[in-house]
Image (cartoon, rainbow, N blue to C red; front, top):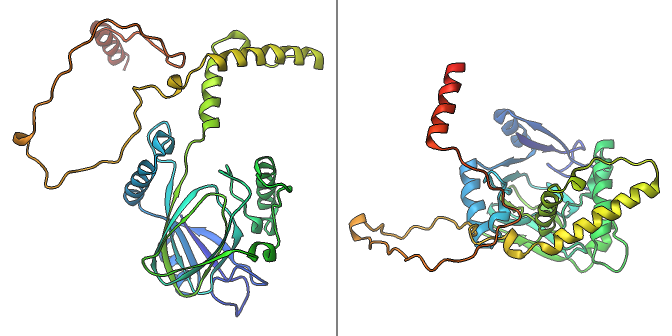
Length: 328
């Protein structure tokens, strides 16, 4: 889908999103219609081709040490690459993202205003302009505020919609021109204005956090016990709290038994981007691999997070395949 922003005020500057003429947006699958809107003064946002995303996301995430946390369980990247084709005057008001953003300015110029936020490693973005939209957007903004209120590092309470004057005071002003490259840490407040027609590419890196890793591991271990799998069933608060006390004791026991090597075993090395030596060496030039000798017998500790199943024998697999064909 292609996101299109158009000026919300007749006679306003193309793409204007601040002041009295806030931009209206919609999505379309029709590339020709989106291009027509762009020619008429609208700004566009769309995902980059999958091939480009795989190349940039894999290279950046692995070289930055994000390891397997940059991937979904099926191996797909958690991150994305976006393209912005913005018209002069298009402004995105103050907000912050939960992704680590890397922006490459290809043409035109954009002025960025930046200010450090109070939420380190946010798990959600903060988009105050959503509060001025419909009820659904207002609900999303409220959820963002509740989340950040728990995670804010500031001495004062988290302010989900700070005044523009407060953000502009002491902010950094950066002008991106063709060839400029900007890294924007997650949680950084920013406001972006196109000073002229602009084309830029943004790589948004999204990683797995340790809370998710530990939470998934402990959930797996708790479900190994009947008490952990038991459904919630109580007739009084006292009864429920008693059950919770037992569950918390079980949780503490399982957490104490886990080791770092259980969650990050040696058999799961961090993935690395493909590297090719140029010129490519021929197979004839390659040195034969050396085989390591097996050492003395060792004692192994079974990883409590590992699940071992007996694999079928060749005969069993053949019989299973034959019965399935017969059923068809």
